[in-house]
Length: 486
Image (cartoon, rainbow, N blue to C red; front, top):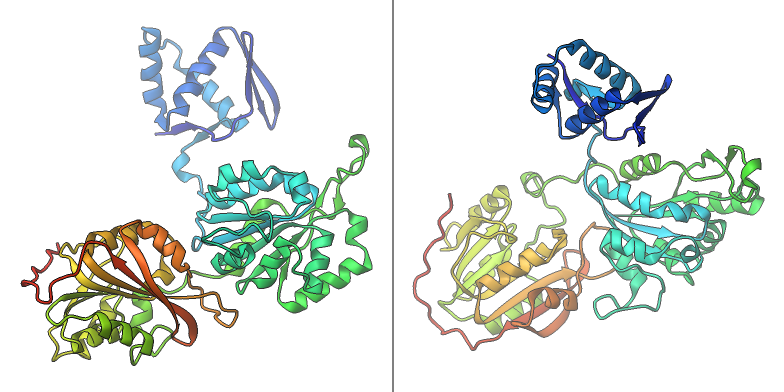
Protein backbone atom coordinates (compact mmCIF):
# COMPACT_ATOMS: atom_id res chain seq x y z
CA UNK A 1 0.00 0.00 0.00
CA UNK A 2 1.44 3.36 -1.06
CA UNK A 3 2.28 6.08 1.47
CA UNK A 4 2.38 9.78 0.59
CA UNK A 5 3.84 12.88 2.25
CA UNK A 6 4.37 16.46 1.16
CA UNK A 7 7.94 17.19 0.04
CA UNK A 8 10.05 19.38 2.34
CA UNK A 9 10.29 22.01 -0.40
CA UNK A 10 7.51 22.59 -2.93
CA UNK A 11 7.14 24.90 -5.91
CA UNK A 12 3.52 25.90 -5.46
CA UNK A 13 1.63 29.16 -5.13
CA UNK A 14 -2.01 30.15 -4.67
CA UNK A 15 -3.48 33.15 -6.44
CA UNK A 16 -7.17 33.85 -6.25
CA UNK A 17 -9.03 30.63 -7.06
CA UNK A 18 -6.02 29.07 -8.76
CA UNK A 19 -3.32 26.79 -7.30
CA UNK A 20 -0.26 26.55 -9.55
CA UNK A 21 2.23 23.70 -9.23
CA UNK A 22 5.63 24.15 -10.91
CA UNK A 23 7.37 20.95 -11.94
CA UNK A 24 9.89 19.45 -14.35
CA UNK A 25 7.28 19.31 -17.10
CA UNK A 26 6.21 22.91 -16.64
CA UNK A 27 3.40 24.57 -14.67
CA UNK A 28 0.10 22.87 -13.88
CA UNK A 29 -2.81 25.09 -12.74
CA UNK A 30 -5.79 23.84 -10.70
CA UNK A 31 -8.88 26.01 -10.64
CA UNK A 32 -12.16 26.08 -8.74
CA UNK A 33 -13.04 22.78 -7.04
CA UNK A 34 -9.81 21.18 -8.29
CA UNK A 35 -7.79 23.91 -6.56
CA UNK A 36 -9.74 23.44 -3.32
CA UNK A 37 -9.13 19.67 -3.44
CA UNK A 38 -5.42 20.14 -4.15
CA UNK A 39 -5.06 22.53 -1.20
CA UNK A 40 -6.86 20.17 1.20
CA UNK A 41 -4.74 17.20 0.08
CA UNK A 42 -1.46 19.15 0.37
CA UNK A 43 -2.42 20.45 3.82
CA UNK A 44 -3.13 16.90 5.03
CA UNK A 45 0.08 15.51 3.54
CA UNK A 46 2.05 18.31 5.24
CA UNK A 47 1.04 16.83 8.61
CA UNK A 48 3.01 13.65 7.91
CA UNK A 49 2.99 10.41 5.90
CA UNK A 50 -0.42 8.87 5.19
CA UNK A 51 -1.63 5.95 3.09
CA UNK A 52 -3.82 6.52 0.06
CA UNK A 53 -6.69 4.67 1.73
CA UNK A 54 -6.42 6.78 4.90
CA UNK A 55 -6.36 9.92 2.77
CA UNK A 56 -9.61 8.89 1.07
CA UNK A 57 -11.20 8.28 4.47
CA UNK A 58 -10.06 11.69 5.67
CA UNK A 59 -11.48 13.43 2.58
CA UNK A 60 -14.78 11.61 3.08
CA UNK A 61 -15.02 12.92 6.63
CA UNK A 62 -14.12 16.45 5.53
CA UNK A 63 -16.69 16.49 2.73
CA UNK A 64 -19.35 14.68 4.76
CA UNK A 65 -19.91 12.03 2.07
CA UNK A 66 -18.18 9.07 0.44
CA UNK A 67 -15.79 9.94 -2.38
CA UNK A 68 -17.71 8.86 -5.49
CA UNK A 69 -14.72 9.08 -7.85
CA UNK A 70 -11.60 7.95 -5.93
CA UNK A 71 -9.73 7.78 -9.21
CA UNK A 72 -9.72 11.59 -9.21
CA UNK A 73 -7.70 11.54 -6.00
CA UNK A 74 -5.33 8.97 -7.53
CA UNK A 75 -4.83 11.21 -10.56
CA UNK A 76 -4.16 14.23 -8.36
CA UNK A 77 -1.56 12.29 -6.36
CA UNK A 78 0.15 11.13 -9.56
CA UNK A 79 0.42 14.74 -10.77
CA UNK A 80 1.75 15.97 -7.42
CA UNK A 81 4.33 13.18 -7.28
CA UNK A 82 5.45 13.91 -10.86
CA UNK A 83 5.87 17.59 -10.00
CA UNK A 84 7.99 16.81 -6.93
CA UNK A 85 5.49 18.35 -4.53
CA UNK A 86 4.64 14.97 -2.97
CA UNK A 87 6.87 12.01 -2.14
CA UNK A 88 5.57 8.48 -2.61
CA UNK A 89 6.72 5.79 -0.16
CA UNK A 90 8.96 8.28 1.72
CA UNK A 91 10.53 5.52 3.82
CA UNK A 92 12.49 4.63 0.69
CA UNK A 93 13.92 8.16 0.39
CA UNK A 94 17.63 8.13 1.27
CA UNK A 95 18.30 10.46 4.18
CA UNK A 96 21.54 12.48 4.25
CA UNK A 97 24.28 11.01 6.39
CA UNK A 98 25.01 12.63 9.72
CA UNK A 99 28.58 13.81 10.23
CA UNK A 100 31.21 11.41 11.45
CA UNK A 101 31.47 13.57 14.57
CA UNK A 102 30.30 17.01 15.70
CA UNK A 103 33.04 19.61 15.45
CA UNK A 104 33.89 22.90 17.13
CA UNK A 105 34.20 25.12 14.04
CA UNK A 106 35.60 28.65 13.99
CA UNK A 107 34.34 30.40 10.87
CA UNK A 108 36.55 33.31 9.84
CA UNK A 109 34.82 35.70 7.43
CA UNK A 110 36.85 38.07 5.30
CA UNK A 111 35.82 40.83 2.92
CA UNK A 112 34.40 39.25 -0.23
CA UNK A 113 30.84 39.31 -1.56
CA UNK A 114 30.41 35.64 -0.59
CA UNK A 115 30.47 36.85 3.03
CA UNK A 116 26.82 37.79 2.51
CA UNK A 117 26.02 34.05 2.39
CA UNK A 118 27.62 33.37 5.79
CA UNK A 119 24.33 33.01 7.74
CA UNK A 120 23.27 30.21 5.38
CA UNK A 121 26.67 28.51 5.78
CA UNK A 122 26.44 28.68 9.59
CA UNK A 123 22.94 27.17 9.51
CA UNK A 124 24.16 24.39 7.21
CA UNK A 125 27.04 23.61 9.58
CA UNK A 126 24.69 23.58 12.56
CA UNK A 127 22.28 21.25 10.75
CA UNK A 128 25.17 18.76 10.56
CA UNK A 129 25.61 18.92 14.33
CA UNK A 130 28.60 21.29 14.44
CA UNK A 131 29.05 24.16 16.92
CA UNK A 132 30.09 27.40 15.20
CA UNK A 133 31.81 30.53 16.49
CA UNK A 134 32.56 33.42 14.16
CA UNK A 135 35.40 35.91 13.71
CA UNK A 136 35.09 38.74 11.17
CA UNK A 137 37.39 41.22 9.48
CA UNK A 138 36.35 44.86 9.28
CA UNK A 139 35.78 44.45 5.54
CA UNK A 140 33.50 41.45 6.11
CA UNK A 141 31.18 43.59 8.22
CA UNK A 142 30.40 45.60 5.07
CA UNK A 143 28.74 42.50 3.62
CA UNK A 144 27.04 40.77 6.56
CA UNK A 145 25.65 41.83 9.92
CA UNK A 146 27.38 40.61 13.07
CA UNK A 147 24.04 40.81 14.90
CA UNK A 148 22.51 38.31 12.47
CA UNK A 149 25.37 35.88 13.02
CA UNK A 150 25.15 36.27 16.80
CA UNK A 151 21.44 35.46 16.65
CA UNK A 152 22.18 32.28 14.69
CA UNK A 153 25.27 31.06 16.57
CA UNK A 154 24.28 32.16 20.11
CA UNK A 155 27.92 33.24 20.54
CA UNK A 156 29.37 36.76 20.57
CA UNK A 157 31.04 37.61 17.28
CA UNK A 158 34.77 38.33 17.51
CA UNK A 159 35.49 41.49 15.54
CA UNK A 160 38.75 42.86 16.88
CA UNK A 161 41.97 41.45 18.31
CA UNK A 162 41.71 43.95 21.17
CA UNK A 163 38.09 43.18 22.17
CA UNK A 164 39.05 40.83 25.02
CA UNK A 165 36.85 39.89 27.95
CA UNK A 166 37.57 38.66 31.47
CA UNK A 167 37.04 35.07 30.32
CA UNK A 168 38.88 35.49 27.01
CA UNK A 169 41.38 38.35 27.28
CA UNK A 170 43.06 37.44 23.98
CA UNK A 171 40.29 36.68 21.45
CA UNK A 172 42.41 35.10 18.73
CA UNK A 173 44.09 32.70 21.18
CA UNK A 174 40.75 31.86 22.80
CA UNK A 175 39.22 30.95 19.44
CA UNK A 176 42.34 29.14 18.21
CA UNK A 177 42.45 27.02 21.36
CA UNK A 178 38.72 26.24 21.27
CA UNK A 179 38.52 25.20 17.61
CA UNK A 180 38.78 21.66 16.32
CA UNK A 181 38.89 23.07 12.78
CA UNK A 182 39.06 26.60 11.36
CA UNK A 183 37.31 27.57 8.12
CA UNK A 184 38.05 30.90 6.44
CA UNK A 185 35.14 31.54 4.10
CA UNK A 186 35.28 33.49 2.00
CA UNK A 187 39.05 33.87 1.88
CA UNK A 188 39.71 37.16 0.11
CA UNK A 189 42.91 37.88 -1.81
CA UNK A 190 43.96 40.22 1.01
CA UNK A 191 43.50 37.53 3.66
CA UNK A 192 45.46 35.04 1.52
CA UNK A 193 48.30 37.57 1.43
CA UNK A 194 48.20 38.12 5.20
CA UNK A 195 48.30 34.40 5.91
CA UNK A 196 51.12 33.74 3.43
CA UNK A 197 53.21 36.50 5.04
CA UNK A 198 52.44 35.45 8.62
CA UNK A 199 50.70 38.78 9.30
CA UNK A 200 48.86 38.68 12.65
CA UNK A 201 47.56 42.26 12.40
CA UNK A 202 44.00 41.15 11.55
CA UNK A 203 41.82 39.05 13.89
CA UNK A 204 40.88 36.39 11.31
CA UNK A 205 44.46 35.85 10.12
CA UNK A 206 45.65 35.82 13.76
CA UNK A 207 43.17 33.03 14.58
CA UNK A 208 44.21 30.97 11.55
CA UNK A 209 47.93 31.44 12.18
CA UNK A 210 47.60 30.61 15.91
CA UNK A 211 45.47 27.48 15.44
CA UNK A 212 47.02 24.07 15.99
CA UNK A 213 44.06 22.33 14.35
CA UNK A 214 43.43 22.04 10.59
CA UNK A 215 42.75 25.35 8.81
CA UNK A 216 40.65 25.27 5.62
CA UNK A 217 40.68 28.17 3.15
CA UNK A 218 37.89 28.75 0.63
CA UNK A 219 39.12 31.51 -1.72
CA UNK A 220 36.45 33.54 -3.46
CA UNK A 221 37.25 36.43 -5.77
CA UNK A 222 37.01 37.89 -9.25
CA UNK A 223 38.61 35.56 -11.84
CA UNK A 224 41.07 38.28 -12.81
CA UNK A 225 42.23 38.50 -9.19
CA UNK A 226 42.29 34.72 -8.89
CA UNK A 227 44.58 34.47 -11.92
CA UNK A 228 47.06 37.05 -10.60
CA UNK A 229 50.60 35.67 -10.12
CA UNK A 230 50.74 37.06 -6.57
CA UNK A 231 47.60 35.13 -5.60
CA UNK A 232 49.00 31.95 -7.15
CA UNK A 233 52.25 32.42 -5.16
CA UNK A 234 50.30 32.94 -1.93
CA UNK A 235 48.16 29.84 -2.51
CA UNK A 236 51.26 27.75 -3.24
CA UNK A 237 52.95 29.02 -0.06
CA UNK A 238 49.89 28.33 2.09
CA UNK A 239 49.53 24.85 0.68
CA UNK A 240 53.19 24.18 1.51
CA UNK A 241 52.59 25.58 5.03
CA UNK A 242 49.90 22.95 5.62
CA UNK A 243 46.71 24.92 5.00
CA UNK A 244 43.96 23.11 3.09
CA UNK A 245 42.99 25.29 0.12
CA UNK A 246 39.74 24.48 -1.68
CA UNK A 247 39.48 24.80 -5.45
CA UNK A 248 37.17 27.53 -6.78
CA UNK A 249 33.87 26.85 -8.54
CA UNK A 250 32.03 28.51 -11.39
CA UNK A 251 29.53 31.19 -10.54
CA UNK A 252 28.42 34.68 -11.46
CA UNK A 253 30.59 37.73 -10.83
CA UNK A 254 28.48 40.44 -9.23
CA UNK A 255 30.99 43.12 -10.22
CA UNK A 256 29.53 42.78 -13.69
CA UNK A 257 26.23 44.39 -14.62
CA UNK A 258 23.32 41.99 -13.99
CA UNK A 259 22.58 41.63 -17.68
CA UNK A 260 26.22 40.89 -18.55
CA UNK A 261 26.85 38.17 -15.99
CA UNK A 262 27.87 34.68 -17.02
CA UNK A 263 29.45 31.75 -15.14
CA UNK A 264 33.14 32.34 -14.43
CA UNK A 265 35.80 30.49 -12.40
CA UNK A 266 36.49 32.19 -9.07
CA UNK A 267 33.72 31.84 -6.46
CA UNK A 268 34.11 29.44 -3.54
CA UNK A 269 32.42 26.03 -3.74
CA UNK A 270 28.78 25.51 -2.69
CA UNK A 271 28.18 25.11 1.03
CA UNK A 272 27.56 21.36 0.90
CA UNK A 273 30.90 20.85 -0.86
CA UNK A 274 32.71 23.00 1.71
CA UNK A 275 31.16 21.07 4.62
CA UNK A 276 31.99 17.72 3.02
CA UNK A 277 35.63 18.79 2.66
CA UNK A 278 35.66 20.16 6.22
CA UNK A 279 34.43 16.89 7.71
CA UNK A 280 36.88 14.85 5.62
CA UNK A 281 39.82 17.02 6.69
CA UNK A 282 38.80 16.80 10.36
CA UNK A 283 38.90 13.01 10.09
CA UNK A 284 36.89 10.32 11.84
CA UNK A 285 35.72 10.54 15.41
CA UNK A 286 38.40 9.71 17.95
CA UNK A 287 38.18 6.49 19.87
CA UNK A 288 35.81 6.48 22.81
CA UNK A 289 37.21 6.95 26.28
CA UNK A 290 36.74 3.26 27.05
CA UNK A 291 38.43 2.25 23.76
CA UNK A 292 41.43 4.37 24.71
CA UNK A 293 41.79 2.61 28.06
CA UNK A 294 41.19 -0.81 26.47
CA UNK A 295 44.48 -0.46 24.59
CA UNK A 296 47.79 -1.67 26.01
CA UNK A 297 49.08 1.83 26.84
CA UNK A 298 50.79 3.86 27.96
CA UNK A 299 49.06 6.77 26.24
CA UNK A 300 48.63 10.52 26.65
CA UNK A 301 46.39 10.08 29.71
CA UNK A 302 48.52 7.58 31.63
CA UNK A 303 50.33 8.70 34.77
CA UNK A 304 52.83 6.91 37.00
CA UNK A 305 52.81 9.53 39.75
CA UNK A 306 50.97 12.61 40.90
CA UNK A 307 52.44 15.95 39.81
CA UNK A 308 54.42 17.61 42.68
CA UNK A 309 52.13 20.66 42.73
CA UNK A 310 49.01 18.50 43.04
CA UNK A 311 50.61 16.25 45.67
CA UNK A 312 51.55 19.27 47.79
CA UNK A 313 48.04 20.71 47.50
CA UNK A 314 46.48 17.38 48.52
CA UNK A 315 48.82 17.05 51.50
CA UNK A 316 47.84 20.50 52.73
CA UNK A 317 44.11 19.73 52.56
CA UNK A 318 43.79 16.05 53.42
CA UNK A 319 42.17 15.08 56.70
CA UNK A 320 42.44 11.43 57.75
CA UNK A 321 39.03 9.78 57.78
CA UNK A 322 37.36 12.48 55.67
CA UNK A 323 35.76 11.65 52.34
CA UNK A 324 37.54 12.33 49.06
CA UNK A 325 36.28 11.99 45.49
CA UNK A 326 38.59 11.51 42.49
CA UNK A 327 36.71 12.23 39.25
CA UNK A 328 37.99 10.65 36.03
CA UNK A 329 40.43 8.56 38.01
CA UNK A 330 41.92 6.82 34.94
CA UNK A 331 44.63 4.50 36.22
CA UNK A 332 43.98 5.62 39.82
CA UNK A 333 47.17 7.51 40.58
CA UNK A 334 45.39 10.40 42.35
CA UNK A 335 43.02 8.06 44.19
CA UNK A 336 46.00 6.15 45.61
CA UNK A 337 47.65 9.40 46.67
CA UNK A 338 44.49 10.38 48.57
CA UNK A 339 44.40 6.94 50.18
CA UNK A 340 48.05 7.35 51.24
CA UNK A 341 46.98 10.54 53.07
CA UNK A 342 44.41 8.60 55.10
CA UNK A 343 41.26 9.78 53.34
CA UNK A 344 38.34 7.50 52.51
CA UNK A 345 38.31 7.57 48.72
CA UNK A 346 35.68 7.11 46.03
CA UNK A 347 37.21 7.04 42.54
CA UNK A 348 35.00 7.33 39.44
CA UNK A 349 35.49 7.07 35.71
CA UNK A 350 33.39 6.64 32.58
CA UNK A 351 35.61 3.76 31.41
CA UNK A 352 35.10 0.30 32.94
CA UNK A 353 38.50 -0.69 31.52
CA UNK A 354 40.21 2.20 33.29
CA UNK A 355 38.56 1.22 36.57
CA UNK A 356 39.63 -2.41 36.09
CA UNK A 357 43.23 -1.30 35.58
CA UNK A 358 43.15 1.05 38.56
CA UNK A 359 41.61 -1.55 40.85
CA UNK A 360 44.14 -4.22 39.77
CA UNK A 361 46.95 -1.87 40.79
CA UNK A 362 45.28 -1.14 44.15
CA UNK A 363 44.08 -4.51 45.46
CA UNK A 364 45.26 -3.87 49.03
CA UNK A 365 43.53 -0.49 49.29
CA UNK A 366 40.00 0.28 50.59
CA UNK A 367 39.21 2.54 47.63
CA UNK A 368 35.67 2.39 46.19
CA UNK A 369 35.80 2.24 42.37
CA UNK A 370 32.63 3.32 40.55
CA UNK A 371 31.62 3.82 36.91
CA UNK A 372 30.01 7.26 36.94
CA UNK A 373 29.55 10.33 34.73
CA UNK A 374 30.51 13.64 36.34
CA UNK A 375 27.92 15.40 34.18
CA UNK A 376 25.04 13.30 35.58
CA UNK A 377 26.34 11.68 38.72
CA UNK A 378 24.56 8.99 40.71
CA UNK A 379 26.48 9.95 43.86
CA UNK A 380 24.73 11.87 46.62
CA UNK A 381 27.00 12.03 49.70
CA UNK A 382 29.15 15.15 50.25
CA UNK A 383 32.95 15.14 50.07
CA UNK A 384 35.62 17.18 51.84
CA UNK A 385 38.07 17.04 48.90
CA UNK A 386 37.24 16.60 45.20
CA UNK A 387 39.93 16.20 42.54
CA UNK A 388 39.51 16.47 38.78
CA UNK A 389 42.77 15.90 36.95
CA UNK A 390 42.03 16.65 33.30
CA UNK A 391 38.35 15.70 32.90
CA UNK A 392 37.48 19.19 31.64
CA UNK A 393 39.62 18.38 28.58
CA UNK A 394 36.79 16.34 27.08
CA UNK A 395 33.74 18.37 28.17
CA UNK A 396 32.08 20.72 25.69
CA UNK A 397 29.77 22.16 28.35
CA UNK A 398 30.88 23.03 31.88
CA UNK A 399 27.39 23.60 33.31
CA UNK A 400 26.46 19.91 33.99
CA UNK A 401 29.88 19.27 35.54
CA UNK A 402 29.59 22.41 37.69
CA UNK A 403 26.14 21.32 38.90
CA UNK A 404 27.67 18.03 40.10
CA UNK A 405 30.43 19.90 41.94
CA UNK A 406 27.85 22.04 43.72
CA UNK A 407 25.88 18.91 44.65
CA UNK A 408 28.84 16.90 46.00
CA UNK A 409 31.15 19.50 47.58
CA UNK A 410 30.47 19.79 51.31
CA UNK A 411 30.60 23.19 53.07
CA UNK A 412 34.25 24.19 53.32
CA UNK A 413 35.31 21.56 50.77
CA UNK A 414 38.33 21.91 48.49
CA UNK A 415 37.99 21.35 44.74
CA UNK A 416 41.26 20.79 42.88
CA UNK A 417 41.06 21.03 39.08
CA UNK A 418 43.90 20.51 36.60
CA UNK A 419 43.53 21.53 32.97
CA UNK A 420 45.81 22.25 30.02
CA UNK A 421 46.56 25.85 29.13
CA UNK A 422 47.02 27.25 25.62
CA UNK A 423 50.40 25.99 24.45
CA UNK A 424 51.55 25.87 20.79
CA UNK A 425 53.52 22.71 21.60
CA UNK A 426 50.35 20.92 22.75
CA UNK A 427 48.80 19.22 19.73
CA UNK A 428 46.23 17.24 21.76
CA UNK A 429 42.64 18.15 20.90
CA UNK A 430 41.73 19.13 24.46
CA UNK A 431 39.39 21.80 25.75
CA UNK A 432 41.28 24.31 27.89
CA UNK A 433 38.96 26.47 29.99
CA UNK A 434 40.76 29.13 31.99
CA UNK A 435 40.30 29.54 35.78
CA UNK A 436 37.85 32.43 35.38
CA UNK A 437 35.65 30.40 33.03
CA UNK A 438 35.58 27.47 35.47
CA UNK A 439 34.81 29.84 38.36
CA UNK A 440 31.94 31.41 36.45
CA UNK A 441 30.43 27.97 35.82
CA UNK A 442 30.73 26.99 39.49
CA UNK A 443 28.99 30.14 40.73
CA UNK A 444 29.31 32.26 43.85
CA UNK A 445 29.54 29.36 46.33
CA UNK A 446 33.10 28.67 45.17
CA UNK A 447 36.09 31.00 45.23
CA UNK A 448 39.55 30.56 43.74
CA UNK A 449 42.14 30.10 46.47
CA UNK A 450 45.06 29.87 44.08
CA UNK A 451 46.09 28.89 40.53
CA UNK A 452 49.45 27.12 40.22
CA UNK A 453 51.36 26.50 36.96
CA UNK A 454 52.12 22.81 36.49
CA UNK A 455 52.22 20.13 33.80
CA UNK A 456 49.68 17.52 32.81
CA UNK A 457 51.24 14.73 30.82
CA UNK A 458 53.94 16.37 28.71
CA UNK A 459 52.16 19.70 28.38
CA UNK A 460 51.71 22.93 30.30
CA UNK A 461 48.74 23.05 32.65
CA UNK A 462 47.32 24.93 35.62
CA UNK A 463 46.15 23.56 38.97
CA UNK A 464 43.19 25.66 40.12
CA UNK A 465 42.16 25.25 43.76
CA UNK A 466 38.63 26.28 44.72
CA UNK A 467 37.23 26.52 48.22
CA UNK A 468 33.54 26.21 48.94
CA UNK A 469 32.01 28.60 51.44
CA UNK A 470 30.40 27.33 54.64
CA UNK A 471 33.12 26.44 57.12
CA UNK A 472 35.53 23.56 57.55
CA UNK A 473 34.65 19.87 57.41
CA UNK A 474 35.17 17.87 60.62
CA UNK A 475 38.28 15.72 60.79
CA UNK A 476 36.34 12.45 61.04
CA UNK A 477 33.09 11.82 59.23
CA UNK A 478 30.53 9.06 59.75
CA UNK A 479 30.47 6.03 57.45
CA UNK A 480 29.57 6.89 53.89
CA UNK A 481 26.54 5.07 52.39
CA UNK A 482 27.25 3.54 49.01
CA UNK A 483 25.23 4.90 46.05
CA UNK A 484 22.56 2.75 44.46
CA UNK A 485 23.37 1.93 40.84
CA UNK A 486 20.64 0.32 38.78
